View 1: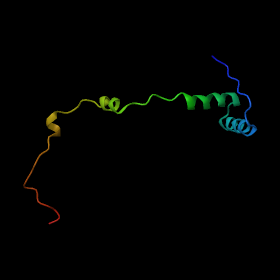
View 2: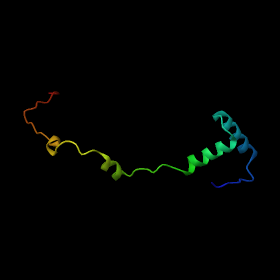
View 3: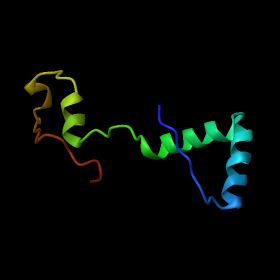
View 4: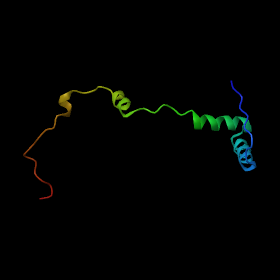
Length: 77
């Protein structure tokens, strides 16, 4: 694993990191690692095509056929 050294951090930022770390019950160093991972390691987003291809192939073509019925009366008449 690599080591990072961050210099010239504003005191307010360092203090905020320590406070957030204590709220999460971890060290400032661990909180720093978590923040970096959350920002830099993003999950792969699926494309629209990926989502469409994940839809299971169920039913038959006839299941989606539009039925035209001219005998239906308008309920608003």
